[in-house]
Length: 363
Image 1 (cartoon, rainbow, N blue to C red):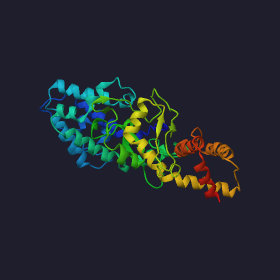
Image 2 (cartoon, one colour):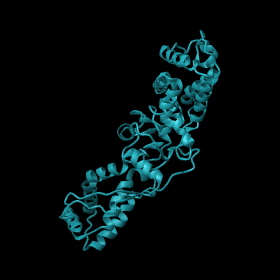
Image 3 (tube, one colour):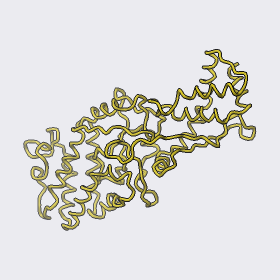
């Protein structure tokens, strides 16, 4: 990813997960004959005066029903299985530590297949789906969390997973809250705030979708955790290299051109980033769409400034300084990182055809 952002420790949004963990601790040793009595297994702030599940003072029938169904499945388990499930919940609470360390292969035990194998039902997944639906409602101040998150983003406000789309302003709508570890595959972390990262909807819904950031073809891999806290790896300087590309209308054998994208550094983190979000493919497509627009912007700036070039050397020297407006080392790096790479490539791959083309556009 292009940059990491700050983790927002919003107390209210973390509260639902607290109640879930409290409940799991309380039921760890229940007997098979034990009835579901909420006031015994939930913190009093999760209940109304009648002892019913009512996080906001009003009885929540759906949440009550899902907890009840899971409770009834859980109490039938042998104690070894109860302990195994409890330990999975404890292990999952530190999920933020596992993305960047592929030596922790125990993550596989958090998958839905293993949980269903323990419980022999879908009741836990159904419970977590219901809790996630409830968490993203206004009841837990997700709007306030998003506002705080948005205000702490860098100036450019670009999605750190692609750098192509802006993260939506909170006054318009919330960007997607992406489950870094997909909630269908890892429901145990559905409401853990450490597993929720705002991203643009294109990254979340169209490209990442249900991909598994922990495993590919059952082989453990690393994924750069998007938050700065408790991360061994901080922001890395990403360089987009277009070496080998053919600029459109500069090669008689390929007038449409051909864009090739390489990502540096070439490490396992960036390999996963590309596979999860189809980064290279999207950047190539963006270059096809924006090549003429960016070239027209460049030539228009020359017209306005009444700048003419006698030869390629003068134009290349100007390009060298022009591209610095989009330098990825400044505060706008996420907004212009691809544009900078584009003009850098024009500078190093200049030829007579491109020179004449720019002169004609400036005429």
